[in-house]
Image (tube, rainbow, N blue to C red; front, side, top):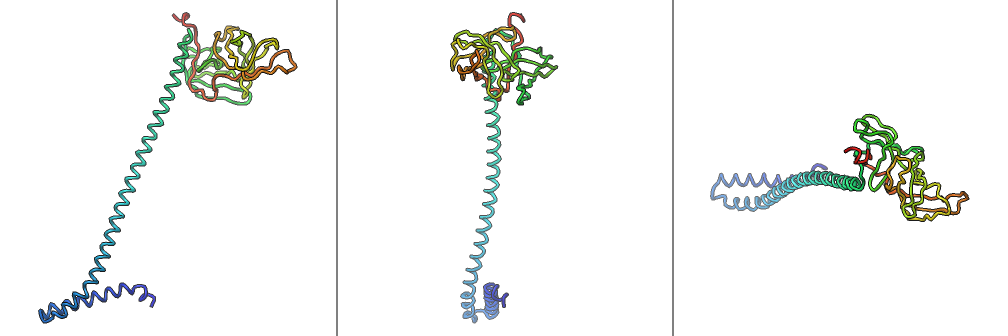
Length: 275
């Protein structure tokens, strides 16, 4: 009974088709005399044919829609692949543009000083609590020596402390073991810049009687013969006159963002020394 209910429509259509075929065969057998039966056959076949035509059309339309959807899905897949290719190319172009901008700044910096420079890339970092150093892609084979000053736009960032054949280590100014002779550009007051790790830099040994204020630019003094005079170091960010010591407590924000260093220049020698 369940099968009969489930396939009732199909059984009805098949029954109609069988009756139509029988009547149509009878009509062929008895010729014109069976005209009455021919009419019955036509009447019986018409709705069946209509149902069959509708079914065939529905199946045909469904197939066309499926083929169309498959085509659209394939087209979308191809378009997504193209978009991903364009995105990858755009990223490469953007990276190339940014690198060109950084290199342009390095070239501009070279034009500002009468020095022979050696360029290098940053290939490693050591940013621990006690040490702030970077590794660069040049060494003794390229003419580098321990103690050479290192710069990056817009100024001084440190010096070479360890040189191998093809790799060198740079001690950054923010390292607590770093000390550089410095001058307050506005007043020409001299002191010592020391690294303070995450706090940046500290300008030491400036008497409380000296005129130093926030915003003052700090440059290298040239004292000691290691660093050339006049290279940019940083800007005074805070001056504490309330400290009990004889000297001002001066915080200096470096001009260079040490976390973003990618290319640097090493000051090898003065131009007139290599001619």
